[in-house]
Length: 172
Image (cartoon, rainbow, N blue to C red; front, side, top):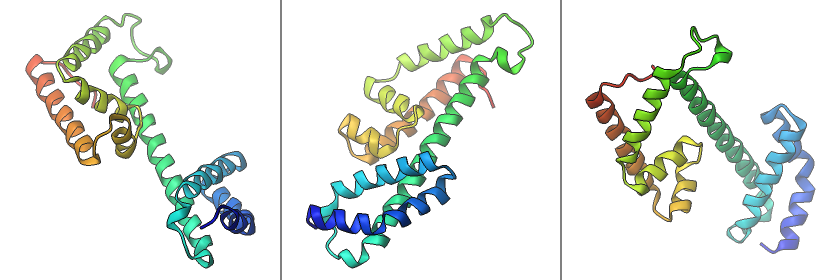
């Protein structure tokens, strides 16, 4: 699809895409961001699309998938923060004591255990914990998605084993 035809099709349905994004995000600003991100994804792959009569459904699918990707990334990030608070403790949550010595020791022990992993495995796991998708990690590390999944699986199992060997307690 040529750039001008792509832009015409997008402009013809822009109002629909904006309303659809607003329904998904419940916010005007987030809806605009979502439409913008979906537009960038669609524009990058405009050569793959040939039937401009189906543009509305094609772009709507990209818009919805972009929303789902953002939702999962946000949820992973929130889960990671919650786990970090549970492991390290947080005075804002009304911790019983101001002495965080035990939590710091556990955290330092976990960091030492992480240092026993290979650089590639540690990087893949850290990126996953930071909320990146398997596909994004694969691009960053320039490896296939299957390799990313196996590295993360390996790190999880290795960390469980090391934690049990060292007698560390983890947050539930």
